[in-house]
Image 1 (cartoon, protein in one colour):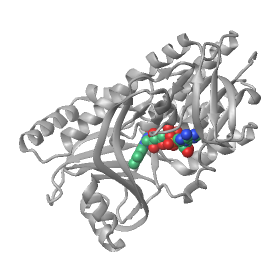
Image 2 (cartoon, helix red, strand yellow; image 1 turned 135 degrees about the vertical axis):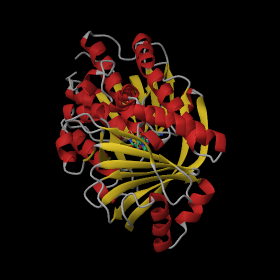
Image 3 (cartoon, helix red, strand yellow; image 1 turned 180 degrees about the vertical axis):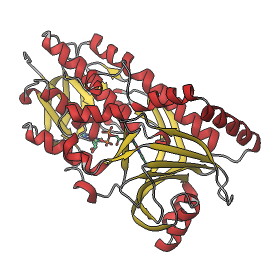
Length: 406
Ligand SMILES: Cc1cc2nc3c(=O)[nH]c(=O)nc-3n(C[C@H](O)[C@H](O)[C@H](O)COP(=O)(O)OP(=O)(O)OC[C@H]3O[C@@H](n4cnc5c(N)ncnc54)[C@H](O)[C@@H]3O)c2cc1C
């Protein structure tokens, strides 16, 4: 592949690492690619400080299979076969199911994969492909017609394309001056593994409570991953409780749908915000994943979207390089933005709408949403539509997410 200058990815989180791996596996020489990260390395497997376990859809699973890393994740990847939703006040003794979805035969709705393990596995695969993540912090850059000069804490280099995979507080996005539409939700997600006396049968539950959605997502038998979104002031109080009192609060929210909550593992907390970059591209640069968009975790779609960005950009860059074209070509970048921004904007709007609709106690709204949920629950066509949108299936998906090689 003819390349005079390099591609630099800033940020080796799951999106940046997957993008780098995809381009290397498609034939980009390792000398043509740089991958830097501000932190020394991801937490080791399951023992890191971040207890997030992510629901990855079929499109993401196919991408990870195509990258050759799914096998290393599969023993820790638990299938989610159905989901049940309820909409009630915290005080109600009886919580009825308002809506339920089941997977199509043969393909779970999603797999639950620990974020720490995903990061460690992707980095190990990169090392196997001969690329080590350089511990460097991106500080500044300047683009001209022919290249882009990047400055890190270790020095300067010229590249043809800079990819900002540097997360929600992206330095790439800030330095180029791309504004973000969005706001803080005033909610915090408390995540962790909980143990329960009842079985889950591969079913996820999400209770829409006035403080925010409370979800239990199935792991191995008797254990679920909790994603508890709560008003920030209440979350702060909850996190300061002694373990047994915290367990009792979780038990209250779980409302007996999994028997009794008998234990909680290490919990971590994540302030929640909505953010959509006004542009996903700039001169010789592109933003991917959380650097471009951050959505509420209630639909478990943040990294699924991010992997869609990574797969799309890898495809466009590789196709360009095969034709001997410049990977920083404005036409390539415009195509990338046109393919990815609408999907992110639609997901941001959907999750924002759902969170607003459900995270309150306004009586007339409750009646309306109960009617709406009942309607969806009775319509197989509408359910199929939601399933299709969440699964990462469909012809619009980039090649890697359809399971095809680049
Ligand atoms: C509670 C919660 C639950 C979630 N559940 C799901 C789910 O079920 N399914 C799902 O798909 N998504 C989920 N998400 C979203 C998902 O966690 C994120 O979308 C994903 O982790 C973002 O990955 P990323 O690679 O874009 O960014 P990050 O993982 O944030 O990585 C960015 C990297 O950039 C580096 N960096 C930052 N600044 C610089 C710099 N100046 N120079 C160099 N490097 C830099 C950082 O060190 C970091 O390693 C959830 C999110 C939350 C908060």
